[in-house]
Length: 321
Ligand code: GLV
Image (tube, rainbow, N blue to C red):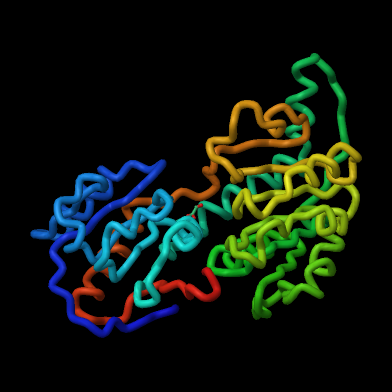
């Protein structure tokens, strides 16, 4: 667990919520219920921005936090923080924290398992054949014949790797540093990246978005996968080089892709992914923050901040995750 101590004792009495694409009202209600006497304001209706020190954020508009000159803590209400770190000018004393919640990991695992089995047992193919009343039996793979490579073995990636292994998949993972997960071969660094995916039937991207990981799902990487491999992107849209994916699908090197995240969300109606027969699209729903469990993490951090204690789940601004 990453922790940090804030030096100043704060007299903060007010919290601001700055959200895009997420309902702030349920967060406000939950916070007010659990933090008696604390005012919770929803941006842009914040009476005295200079009094705000603790902000809950989700995809804030570019530069908006500069309106809050005394911000000490920015709490992302998701597992990721790039929507904050890439869009705001942060003073180096500001602490950015994120949600680490087993529910997020569990939901992600369930989503990934469903999408892998859906593909493995040819449900996509059969539902397509049904439209033409075609009775076409096909072969299928089994779990123990299937290798999955996971890019990103952080909290969620490690959890998913362990659960997939328990079920019987062969699991490998690539991350910034070697991870010691029994039964999961761990790879590290650029030189091992291509190696880590070489015999994968499924490639799952769970990386945080940083300058180093942007465009990592490139033609070079995706063509290192075995013919017929399947891509699942639940990281960020910016990880994927879109035209490279289309090229490798059209040449049948890849058999398909499930994409949950996109460079622009909602995915524009004219985007070629919508009509591509080998691409399944889900609208960024792989693992949604559960207010009921995440609120306790936010409250703990708020109380820790007020009491000058170590905060939970602090992000390294240098690393970007
Ligand atoms: C979802 O994408 C998250 O960052 O929690």
